[in-house]
Image 1 (cartoon, rainbow, N blue to C red):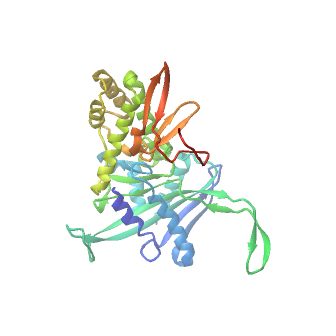
Image 2: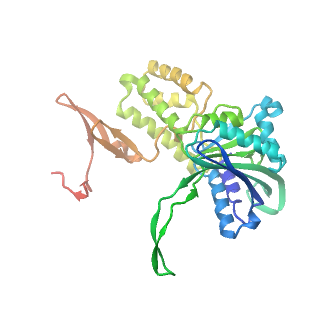
Image 3: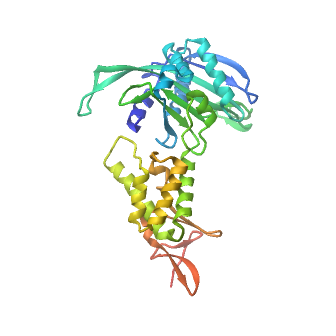
Length: 376
């Protein structure tokens, strides 16, 4: 799914736009026991409460594509006869009315999800009358292309607040607020089926994880019967390790800075051209980047082998998961330097009188602990 398609669905989670009539769920304690189940009607809630509940669900469609929002694919066999796909279809086709399917989903989630403390499992069903868009992108609300029906699952930790002293204006007095349990933003969740090309795709789902370093692989395996994608943070760490280990003597500041610059340039160009499809790069693309930076052929070949072993030879990666687009960080055991990625040219490495140095060009505006200093 593209960012635009996700945003289109996210805008539906408003009381005046959504067709969500109720939310089913259960409350699970730290012992993985269901304490209570509920089927909450939004019509019986006041507007503020329903907006808050929809807001919690909406967060399951937030974050960055490729980092927090990940595509999950089913193969043909899974769609035809797989038990995981069959269960998801039962939830969707019954509009969450199939109690047996709901119970099976709750148990499968609880048994596979490793989440500390208490949490809620929320399930919502929506039917979206998709407005037709002409080739020039104009939306025609009076014409519909199809009805996209889907389920959304949100798994939300329930956390205990701290007791606090509060001032009540209308009573003109201080009173103690006791500690209470509150629903936190979703830790994980998913949308099924996917909304690809603004249409139903039963072969895909969209998975959400709040933490880009933790994808809850057991949960993904239980619900979708497929391996969880490698977390974005792990992708970056793995790529950096492979780069450092294989380049050996070629792993100089100028090379790493150039690789970062090329990948960041691709990201900026993709954004400037307003391309809807998420940007990905193949092993071949990364190989050509290394070659253009002057890396020796033997080191490039070793990089390819390590890439195949870590990610898979046919795996495409998002460049956003390989480099930090916000900063270029130079770190020693005692010093950390953070540089605007567009100004990597301000830093260079040099050996002076046998000692290795990191040099930073500084013309003006140099501060130490907030005090502006002069460099003679």
